[in-house]
Amino acid sequence: MKKILPFFIFFILFTTFFNCSKSADNKLKKDKDFVRDWKVLRYPYSNAVLSLFGNNEFKYSETGHTSELYSEGLWSMKNDTLILNSLRPNECLYIDDFSLNEKETFESMKTTLKNCNPKPNSKFFTEFNNSKFIVKTDSLIYLNLNSDYKRQYGNYKIY
Image (cartoon, rainbow, N blue to C red):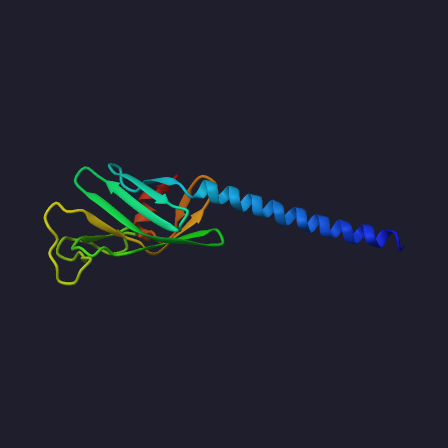
């Protein structure tokens, strides 16, 4: 029994160390694959990219046949969930709701600054406000999308 006990303790410590280092390697691999440019398919005629950077900043850009949208801000992770929060620019722009939860007409659209009138043909600011995405191996699944839109058209494709 005295000979088995040290072997058993060694086995437990070795297994624990091996599993911890393996988890750390998987996390590093996941972070390396995760921090990159993600293609976003939101509308049929748009071209969008969500860029995640290692310093926890992000940039989003989208062009369509008649518009140009952008955002930048900070991202964080909680378990397998990516959370984006935009930093509002200090210029007068219309705000695009990424989640499509607000009914938008030009008369009702919010602006980045109070009581301002954006210049014609200016960019739109896409606002991410605690926007959540589940991280899969090769895609992101957006969680805050308008349920009516999601039911009719499906979720955005982000890969």
